[in-house]
Image 1 (tube, rainbow, N blue to C red):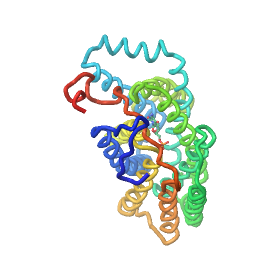
Image 2: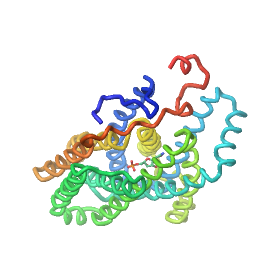
Image 3: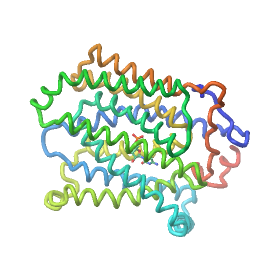
Image 4: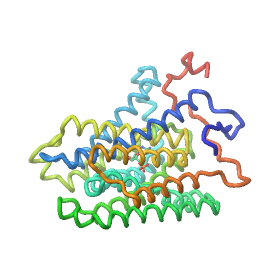
Length: 359
Ligand code: C5P
């Protein structure tokens, strides 16, 4: 699909202006959010002094997402608490089978969000960003397996180029490996394993969530309340398992500084943004946004962390971005997939308001 074109939905209607705006705004914000999240996690995890527990930050982000989604639903219900409670009871308790389905991506995302801290604490920000693009490959593989999508030859070729680009960046990092492990407590291999598992998890959870979201009428906000309930419970379990004793001794908020709070806010906000992008745009455009954010974070790294970009790194990064572009080219003779029909429940405008009637 050409960037900028507005496809009609399955019923031949065009998505309304508000949804179209939301699509591009969410993509643009994702670029900035993605780059700033990686850089800010890297910053707070490499600062000297008391280090906060990453497992508690993951719980905090889940709670924040949950509260935000509940507030949005409350606004949609025009501040009527009783109506909201009945609505949530129906969508979460009565339709418990749907709720239970969300336990799967929730477990995987909780693991992924924890692994992301491990990866970024052990790898340079730019290396993490480029390697994490392998999630486009895993997303494609899971889409073929689970959604029965077919890929064109050009798309398979672009996936090979993606592999090549990531491999080049890895070779470039090989030379620096020793100096990284000698000079600090960072472990390149641990970081690499964490990022590869994160790619597998991102691909599977993303496709699974897309399947659930597009296969039912429930809104993004309800789905994220369901995700958040499991995410908070599982995150707490993970925290107890990994840092239980330390948290009991030092407290949940140990090492929290304003910078840590802003990372948590960023992560929570980014999670909701991913959900909106999957709903209003598509995974291809999400790929564009994240690959563009590589440039943003690499250029910023040069200034913030004295990260040196050499020819090999540039060639690898260019291949990754070229591959993302190739992957997103429309298949010959196949119309672009229509976006899902907009759900009224996704709108931030309360139901029945004048603005909604006018759209
Ligand atoms: O890198 P990736 O696109 O897989 O990142 C997904 C992120 O978005 C995770 O942090 C996950 O917790 C979050 N997410 C969310 N709600 C969704 C989908 C993803 O909070 N519906």
